[in-house]
Image (cartoon, rainbow, N blue to C red; front, side, top):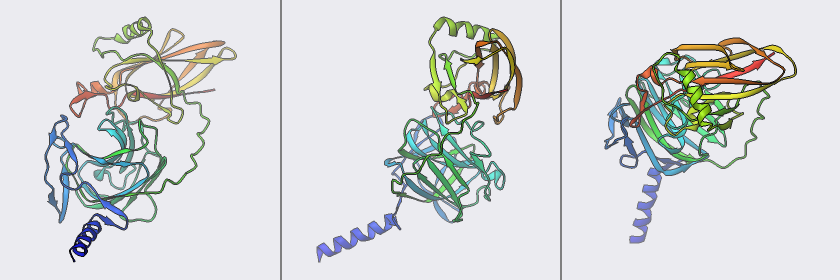
Length: 369
């Protein structure tokens, strides 16, 4: 009889944790909460509109990290009631590197309601990864409960809302330092409530990756080390001199990502750098350079200044927001882009997990005849 009771107790506990193969996760005490100053915080579950929930207020409690599940192919479901930005981080190496999918309830029924971003070294590069691919619409409201399901197989991410059969988002996720890892919850600029969170491992189904399209986006660059930002007028000229003297260039070429996202390459993105590339021309000609950027930028071709933007640009980045003529000579042409990023927009930088840094830093560029 003792054995039977023990088995019965095990079955009851097992059934509490698993429903249709789904394991209840983010149970109180099973995760670590960090403030935006990277301090560990002890939280108790709260009650919000009839549901027992984990509350993150976005400042004194910013992220909740669950490190006892190594996720790769999975389905996570939860109820969310958020004010501004509420989301799930997955394939997390740590609190600085992960895939992030989040909701903007205040933007319900607009193209900005759901957004996916790869987080590199703490950078929330939301101005790069936007509509029509990485942002989409759904019917949600601020601080009202809705149900969300996230399904990842290989590089495919699907997001379902309120048990609708068709996903609101169905995309290929971009490379990050790991293709599996921890889970985390995150709230920004206001409170978010998370309830009834479950996780289920999915079979490692092979999914054919889409062939990368042949494009004329410039993705192959040599980049310098990062240098401190300055407020002196025309300090970019000095940055170029310092980069050439240091002669410490790193080749980058992420062909799957048309955005040149510098936060990917620095553990603490917060400076200004020089990027250079070569363009071969069969003869002397004028082509078009289509581009967009964040922060401040300067573009130089064969030693001649082509474009300078001295204000701080902080808007969504799209192909062809700016276009200029590119006078090419026959043979090799050196194109240089000096880029500062968005840190100055926030004063000393965007605050995340105890440090000020860039959250958007880079550009998009392509050459067209």
